[in-house]
Each structure stands twice: as C-alpha cells, then as structure tokens.
Image (cartoon, rainbow, N blue to C red; front, side, top):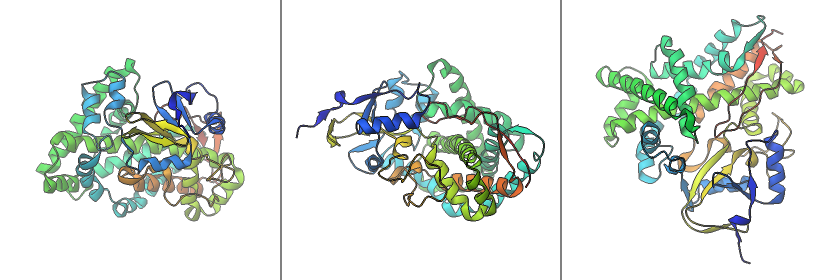
Length: 401
C-alpha cells in the first residue's frame, strides 16, 4: 500500500484551545500524526515514544534555533554546547561527568533535606490564609535544594531565580521580542556559574560541584564552556519542570477529595504513586522533539529524512490503548509503564529524574502530614502553552487537620 504524504496529515494548533487534552483526543481519533504551523510533524500515540530509542531519529540540536533565525549569540552558543541538544559521542562525553556525580543514590540522600525545607516553608504558613503556592512553595524548594547542592549562598537566590525565569525560555522556541532580555540573563547566569566552578577548582569542597569539576578534569574532554553549560542546563531543567509538575499534582489531588484523604492517611506509602499520576495526567513537557535521519513509514504516513518531528507528551500520556479511563486522575492506577515516559528514554533520559522525584514526593508528603486541611483558593490552575508549560497562578490555604 502506498504510504500517505505528511502533507495529508491534519493540522494542529494547541495555542488557542481551551482544553488541550480534549483537543488532542479528537486529533487521535482522526489519525496518528498532525502537522504544526512551525513545520513539525506531531506524533500523537503512546507507541510513538519508541521513536526516541530507534536509530531512525536523533535528538534535535541547533535546528530549533536556526528556524527562528538565531544563528549566533548567547542562546545559540548555549544550545550548541548543551548535552541535551547533542548526539552520539559528543552527548556521551558531555553527559558522563554529570551522570556520575548526579547519581540516583546521591539524589535519594537529599530526601531529608527536601522534607526539612518543605516543612520549614509549610509550617510558617499554616493558618495564615491564601498564599501564592507557585512562588512561595513550588519554586522555592527546588531552587533552595539546587542552591545547596551547588553551594550557592541563600542570599543570592532572588536574583538567581530571576535568571531561572528568563533563561529557561532559551530551551524552546522563544518570543523573539524577549531575546535581548533572555540573553542578558543567560550571560549573567553563565558568569555566575563560571565563578562557582573556578572557586571549586581553586578550593575543592565535599560537594557535588567539586566532584563534578574533578570528574571533568579526569576525563579531560570538555571545554570550559561545555563544563559550564551542563551545570546551567541542569539547573534550568530541574527548576522549571519540577515547579509546574508539583503545582498541578497537588491541585488535582485537592480536587479529588477521596484521593487526597487517602494520601493524607498514608503519604509515604502513596507519594510515588501520586507523583506518577500527576506527571501523567497534566505533563508540563509539551513534546519530545527529534530529527528524522532516514525515510520511514509511521502508521501509514511516509516520513522523509530531515523532517522535524515531535512526540506529543500530553497526547501519549492520555492514550486509551495504554491507560484505562485516561481522562480520570487516579493515584491508585496500576497501568503506568515501568519507566515513566515524562523523563524520556534511552541515552537522553532525564539525568535529573531522581532529584525531581525526591522534591515532588517529599513536598507533597510534608503538606499531607502538616496541613491535611489544605484547600485550593480561587480558580483551578492552568498550564499556559509553550514547550515547557508554565502554571499561570495557584493559591492555596494551608490548614491543619
């Protein structure tokens, strides 16, 4: 049978839809793929996640920036030097020092710190009325933990968090009107991290950053720009995604009263399951972009080499062929794959997975223990469109049992 041309695929535009999940569900009933206005082919089914590990695609590199006319400057240099946006041997040598020092065992040891930080922030706000959960809790714990891991003084956190907010946009398609502001923050962020690295080279400590510097010296294969870029990228990826994922998971738990009560009765027993379901139900990662390296057929469509392809994460994680009643939030769900798709797969699986889980699980468990009467205040939070979807606002009131 002759394969269909990608020109025959349905068009997609998620920037203006009120309910992205209903919209994607409708697209899935009409076909396996869609075409975006940016020129990407969007794969819609859970089975398409296998494309990440097959040799017919590769990780996107600088192509996303070239499409926007960004061919030089701080944003382009950052993407060009990043392990996230590289392939093959280049990716392996950039990732190796981070993987060795940012290991699961080391990150799991951060649980007491995450729980203590969460307790400090929550206890101080119990009974004080509505709070800005996004900025007072969800943004603070990841930022403080990464600051402690890197040895950043707490007093530097306010400006550091502003750099997070600005330069995280560099990871995806950017608003070109904000390019100058993003690049200004990225330059300042680079300079700050470079100074931290120089300090550890001169005076090593018993911390992650010193171990990372030692690992890069032993390997001797990375330039100073590459060494710095991996740390900047690690900070950005971990802070931005954890904040939004935590907000949406708590919001859905509070909306489902019976599940919230069950969680409060056994927070340690259910915290992993609650995080798994929160990450599935409303993922902040919009897509996993790839470049097609050779022609292949995808569910009846001919996909030529050179095609920009992205796997829709929100669509894949609501695929009814994998998840029973996928539009129902259920922390007791038994059909999660062994490895959560939100963190990717293969050589590019998220190196910060362990830390993200630690932070989300311990913050949610702490809220359940200290403030089981917690309630949402005002409108349910929404995730705005974008490569990494940001929570618009979320207010809660912490109340004891």
